[in-house]
Structure formats: structure tokens, C-alpha cells
Length: 402
Image (cartoon, rainbow, N blue to C red; front, top):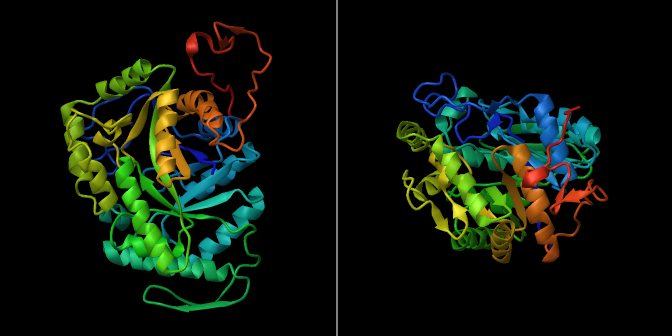
């Protein structure tokens, strides 16, 4: 079976560093206790369009856009970017606690018509009560998952094309309807490592998405969700969220990873760990446990590096190595049941090219990709085995966002 490759849109900012405009001690309101950094790129539409167009050119199927008070709105940003692209799908993250399920169903249907079927949905229940309260949501962790289950029941019911009634603890709907159901129905990506999350994923997710733990830990999660889904007569597919640092040699890749650590002083790491440690998310706590806040022994499994999680919430691990090394690890995860790989890197534009020009062809050679995009540089004279427009092994950058 082929793998599905997706990239990421950094709508909260981007740059050549792991420390960006996120402020872990105050949710981004101030920059207290955070090391000043340079080389940070604003998430303006021109830069995001460069990344989206690069992802499309390099053969990524979709791009994930995050949700939160620290980033731009995912719905508005991606529908704008759909006008800059032709085939690329958008994995739009949203929080079910801050929007009506009938309105969300209607938005998804409209989005599908505007983009001609390029919407995927990433349902984010939310694991940080502080962040949830900024949206006016005061439910505790487990009740948020119970509400998510009701929310998705309503969304799927409303997409049925006939008036839909629902009476639950969190939602009461009479005659819910969209003018026209979306065509095709957007696939629902959903993640969660807690006992409360598992049944929701088993009942409602098309793709269960996990952060990048060790392969045997990912397999245990897959077995857990697969078993819950089988009890409900359903089949769920599986995806993983990882960063990548892929180079022509392993030495170059690890040198890049080590340079990312150079920006991180002990105070920055301590502030990040203090804030992330307050998260109610079981998945976040599992990410923190991979490194324990220490810069030592960050390669927790072959080519799996936990350095990102020292200062970043959410996905905290990266695949680091030569293109062949990274392809080996993707093949390993695929062997335990992962089909969808949602990837990212710092900066996202350059790393998309490193992966797309290095790892993607290797995956194709191994029969893991159904289609590889033809290089736009075919026929261009090369020097030393590299396109003339990308001397010295540097990744080729696209030139304009519009």
C-alpha cells in the first residue's frame, strides 16, 4: 500500500530556529523569559503561498494548518491559498468547542465547492485549559472529548442531506441541514492519547493521527484504536505527525539538528518545559517524557530526535538523517500500520525541498508512492550532479508568492 505525504503551513510564523514568536510562559502575549532570536518569518499570505506552491510542486498531497490563538485562522488562510494552488488539499485544524456543529458542516460544504473537493478536517479537542478559556470554553478534559463525539455525530448527520435532529448533553439540534452536502465528504483526522479520546477516534475518525513516538509505541497506539474501532464495526486508518531534517548525508543532517539547539539556552528550555508541563494533554505529556527536559541523549530511537520538543508543544520529534535514513524510518512506521505522514521542518520552505527532492524519490524507488511529480528542472543543465539553479547542494527556492 502507498503512503500519503503531507506538509505543514506555519501560520504562527516560521524561521531558521526552533524559538519563534510563540511565548510559552504567556501564550504569545509578551516575550518574557524567551531568548531573542533573528531570522523569524511572518506568516503573511505571500510566504505561505510559497510554501503551499512548493508543497504542491513537490508532490505532497495536503498541508496541515494549525489552530489556536497563536496563529492565523485556518479556514480563512487556506481558502485564500486554494486560489494560489490547483491540486493541493488543505488539512484544516479546528476546535469543535468554539463553533456550532451545523455551521461547521455548512462551512465544510461551502469549502468543498469553492476548492473543488480539496478539504480535509483535523479535529482538535484541545488539551490546554488555559488556551481553551481564551475561546470561552470552560469544560474539563474528558468532557471536551464527550462534546467532540456529539459534535462529530451532528456534523455527519447534517451531511446526510435530510433534516437531522440530535439531543445530547452538549448539543441540541432540530432539523439540522446544509443546502448541499459536501462532495466528496471531507476525511476526518483526529488524535488523542487519553482513555477519553480512544472511543471518539474509533467511532468518528477516518484517520487517527499520533505524534512521533518510537515505532513500538506507535504500534501499541494503532493496536488500541484498531481494536476499539473493530468493536464498533469500523475501520480506521493511521497517520503520524513528525518533523524532518533530511540531507545528502547523515553528517549534514545531524549538524543541522545541532545548530537548531544552539539557539536554546537553559532559561528558554526551562520556561518552555514549565509551560508545556501544565498541559492536560496525555499526548503532550508523552512527548515531554521522551526527553525529560534534557539536551542529552535526544536520539531516542534510530534517526528519531526529540530536540524539537524541548521548546515546542505538539509534535516534538524529528526524523534526522540522510535521505535513505529518513526513508528507512518512514518504511518502518508504515510497516506497523501508518499510511499518512504529516511532516514539517524549519524553515518549512527549504525543508520541503530537501524532503521532496531527496526522500520522495527514494520512497518511490521502494514502491511506497503511487506517483512522483516530474521535476520542473528536467532538461536543465546540471553541474556536479546538481541543478544549475541550486548550486552547492542547496535546496531550490521558489521566487514569488502570487
